Image (cartoon, rainbow, N blue to C red; front, side):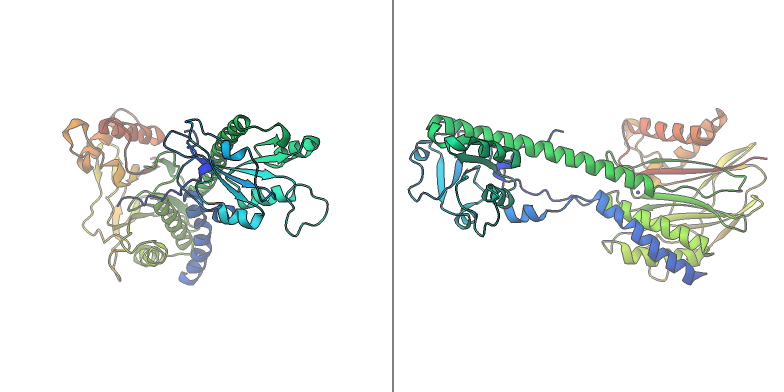
Length: 457
């Protein structure tokens, strides 16, 4: 299912341009706590919302480009009812008159501050409403508050240039001296202020984007599983490649834990789609699985509870997830397998070709059928073996220009060959994923997760 595309917010005139380019009651209690932890993944991977300042200023299409087809609009805020005599003579770069709106106080300014205003020219001598104390820049600070994304020029007298310089430090793009002002200078100052505001806004958005990306990466790394295998003789390896560009988490998820009785439980799953919502849901299902497994649930009871979690947490009723769970006996020779619409694992043993485990009792994917059941299949592993669990991203890539998918048979042949070449563990998984990508002729569009458990003789 295609991932939802976030709607882009519009950008006001002064901010035009673009920035450069992770026992049942006891288990349920643990699930509630764990789901709250995973909910942060939605906030970390989803687009940020509007700030209070954004809502105050409003949004508008990009009109900062002062091209021949765009009128430059100036909002003059001063207390002289006649306005400044030089303002009506302003011309934009194309020789067209600059449109000027005049406000005699901040109340009028807020009314006239519509989306097509490019720059504000503020008389610093204007009294601020309700002003208290000795803050000479109170009116400027109020303008910056109501118009945080518009260019602002401060207008001061010849004997008050220090206040003009302080205005720039507070947030204005520049200051002008009234007695030295002419139409040409003011036109140039307005264009400079608009461009500087645009550049500052783009730089700020880029910096904020970098910080947000770093926070997302830290959160996603924290949500990736840490296998709990202390005391187990089994060796573990995993490979993960999300389908989303520059992401660390996708809709695929996996985990491995060892319970106090010595049983090793492994799981791999796939939420349909590969956007941020699917990644967050995958994290919730993984944490829920770990909590329920450590609480003693397994098999049909475990999968039924996971389906309840999925139905409660999914953003859309059409979202489902496939799952494969394996529980390996303490002696390492036997295992139970449950499949919920998921591809069957691959088993490799010395002297025997690698093969897929039976999937005759494959139950439905989680979230499709209320009251579904998932039979547990018992199987013999032997004394020495390798068990590979994977998601369908590994088998659904294309093979060259034929348009055909690799499929399970092609994957089995590839793993058999790589095993015969002596590959094992992380090297085997890395080689397998890279070869699948090469066969596809480029990066895979779907998430890929592969998990490998090995037991020596």
